[in-house]
Length: 370
Image (cartoon, rainbow, N blue to C red; front, top):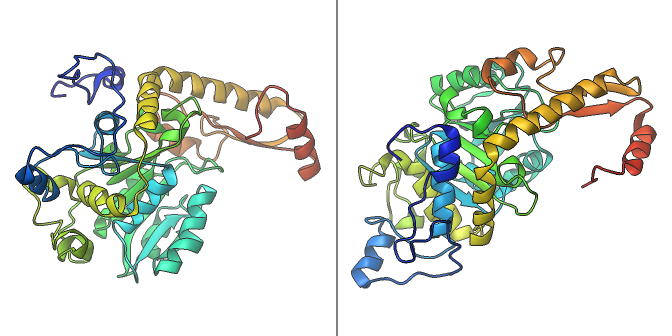
């Protein structure tokens, strides 16, 4: 969309043109595995990336395309790729940059599944993760070596809720010619556009607030289009890629596609060949969720703050974490970035330890233990 629309308008309209055949106003669900080639030349041009278009739903699909374009518009990026889950989005992002013998530097306050992936699974394939305390950005600088290929953080760490000083960490990454990868699931593009603060790659779990209803699983990766992949340390981009006809991703793409080298390689190498494709039905579900994201994030955040303030006053509660509480260790950093509200997650502990926690969880009637 050429005109600069507000977030609320983009959430409703970005990425969609009414179907030219049926004139459907709503986004259709294209339940098809394959797409027809007009002729052999058309097929060859699609596979050679000379022409955009649909080949197979594992790669892309018109319903996926609306979802991807909409998130791209909301994040202020160059291109997005939707996949089957948030963890698939993270895995494919890492292996789209790093290879055997490389290192990554990550914040230590991570979602458990991400931590396990970095600490236990990636090393099986020769990629080593170094974990640092993200509360001090200089810790990232100290961990950088010639083998480092990226820096990885979460905007709000899951589940501790520490807030990362994104600009400071981005400056360190860029001074060392490294991309900053940010998991923005807990903030969503509504509360903060990470690319505006220096992120090069943004990951969102669609399953959480973007979807909003707990009815589908998915993830999406947004390429800012700003990182320079022509640096020789990124051999996956500067050397001929045997995975895709010897293409050099940093040099051989058409001019209009060059800023999207990361996204193009993500779609045509890990997604195409490893196959964690999102279904058209799930993509459609997430499109519905995005339409209400601006309204919901305000209410999610308002509810979380109310819960945090209530818990803070309860004598049975040992501690409460919420970045919107003035007493929270992350408050000063969070308020630099979050001008609307502070997110929909509050975390707390009860006095009496494990047994008290079990008693509380097992006796809750309204909330679900999932």
